[in-house]
Length: 311
Image 1 (cartoon, rainbow, N blue to C red):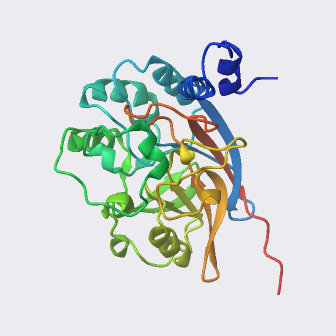
Image 2 (image 1 turned 135 degrees about the vertical axis):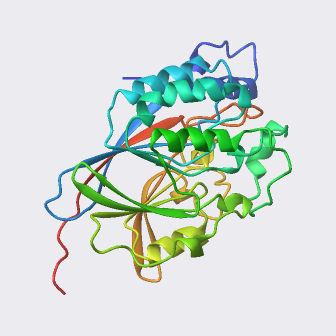
């Protein structure tokens, strides 16, 4: 049986020589490098449809010399998904842009779509590491810091063939499936404009897919009301610091902790969507830790939904 990385770290540090806080901190630093691939099945396709593999990546927050993260991403590329979706915050340093393009090259060769988070436009800023535990979920305005060359990242992705879904819609045919996509800018910095993509889901499509960086209620509610079958989001880092068992302490958004990572059902006024929030692959370089919340990518296998029972 594989031990939890935090517990393994605790077992290798002398309990008599350091305090409990130092032990937990050491374990949290170890866990931040303990990347894991989640495999989840979601029943969102029409009856009789062939399965569709969707790789969901998020919050890479890449900086130079993050060799373990780069190695994990190279391994993920070997999964050969039918569709790749990135829900933003790709970089935490402009110096890592060549490494990002290199490691994502095999995935960029596959059908894909993306949105940006605020950290795709502005570099990280110093804050006390413990401040994450009191993070404010109120949307904020972006700062004037333009250290991250978002336009270069966007151009590279689009030139490779990925679809930019920041306040945009698209339609793709993938592995025999017609997929309608819609997305928004980052709601955490008030850059979401759902009105630009609003409207009922296309009944002729096999799947209506919503993509957003930060899972704020206003975006999730609007997508559910429009009949979007599957919504993908990131931003929360899965809570980043969780209680034993993985329950987040904070979400950094206005959703409850039960929606901060993994697969759930989002319901609003009688309308429901399947929601997947990725715990992401990274964090701010000023808060490089995780506790009971391993960094992740997720391979979603989309399958046929069970037929609805007659009323």
